[in-house]
Image 1: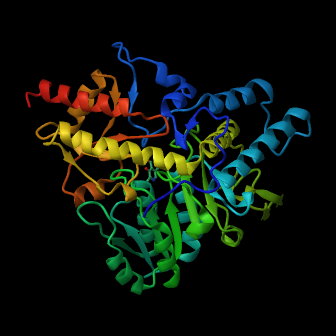
Image 2: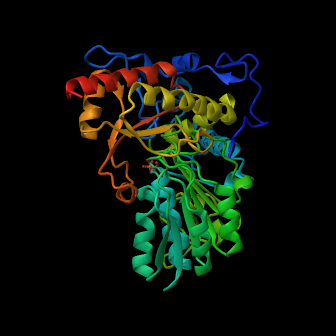
Image 3: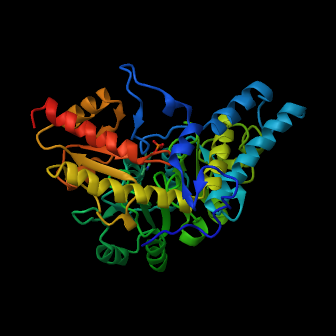
Length: 431
Ligand code: PLP
């Protein structure tokens, strides 16, 4: 599967971040103040942990700062100037997110704190109403705990049945087995769009079509997709699409669930309180319209505004170009790492047309945490551990891995620093 630049990627004319149709990460880096900093031992920061959380550009930081300095007020309440401004900015952010995902209607976007909350919202609200004893829910072996544990809780409570699409040794979903699992007539199929651990880009539109043909609803975990590949919820055709803001250059505390209107309208509220109601009496209440039915209490207004600014920032770069940038980096990094360190264990699909900017690896004989610690001394920030995918690590028979991951600001120089840092790891550990 090749992802080419989207025809609707905005024009690059006049944007110095784009040259000859390609992102220029060296220019983009100037938007991210943290990337100009050094670590406490004087090394320039080489940030290769964007799959965990991304850095934030000035446009996002300034949008939030402007809100707090200039028009901090609650939303949907104050009939005064700054209250109306904050409501307008909050709803504009929702529209910006809808545009990024090509959602047909901004009211189908529910703001949440993160992908975890978005998935839990579906598990509690849709799941508790629709899953009955014996019903199957199909997941995959590569899910992040956020798209596994909520379904475990639901299955335990409702006496449901969890089934898993297995993976091949290089981290590709076995669609032949998926087909067999669909004969169980599952009520729901939930899978990640892009694996946070292996980088695998799953064929989400095909999987959605297969699931729908078997009568299941589909939830896609887009936490690692929205920041990195073009996401068009209408083209994918799924029923629920969840993601976090903080991985897509937006602030922590921001995220969203997109779902089809008719599903959201039929679902009971998740959290209850102010704002999600139309009318309240002592013994009964009526719910607000979507999306507010699912946004009880005062939301993180600044985070939502930051999320909107991030969505605009990415849209201006063009998600097709973002994807191509990360793929070119992978095409540089994988052979370069293998050439410099042929003894390294590299995991995930080697075909970069189905892989996002995630490189998990192990240095033989060195614990991943030790690798990360020595890399840190060179200023290189990577993550080591199980990356919230313990069952996937069990499947691959690995206690842990080191993971380097990219974003729009990642450069070849970052990869070179990683390669040099691994040499230092080997020197320290006598390899
Ligand atoms: N799903 C995937 C694929 C992820 O990578 C992550 C975070 O790493 C999550 C879900 C959960 O995201 P959050 O912790 O922001 O809710």
